[in-house]
Image 1 (tube, rainbow, N blue to C red):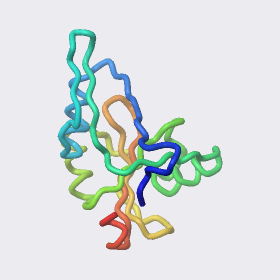
Image 2: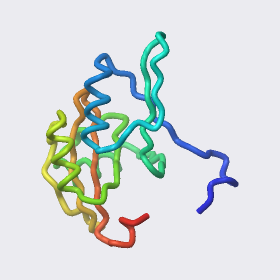
Image 3: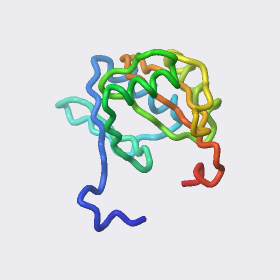
Length: 140
C-alpha cells in the first residue's frame, strides 16, 4: 500500500542514551543492519536505522498487562516497548543476546500463533521480537 495519501509518511522513534557507541553496536550488530544516515558534526552523534515498515500501537494498562503476561508471565514493560518482526526469531534473538541483550522471557507461541520472545536492550528498553506463524505474513 502506498503511503502518499496518508497524513503520516514515516514514524521515527528517537532514543537518547548515555552510552551512544554501546547502543549503536547493540542495534546494528544485534539486528544485523547498517545505518541509513549518520551525523557526526561536532555537535553530537546520531544515526538513523531503517527498520522497515513502522506502526504505532497504543495500549491501555489492561492490554499492556495482557501482552506482558503472554510474553513474560508478568507485567514488566514500561510505557514504551519495541516490537520487531523478524524473519528468523532464533537467529535474531541470539544476535541480540550476543550483543548485550538481556533475556526477559524465553520464546512463546502467542494465542494468535506468532512466536514471540521478550528481551531488554542495554539501556533497559523492552523489546519483543516476533515471527508470524503464516509464511505469507513474514514476506511483508
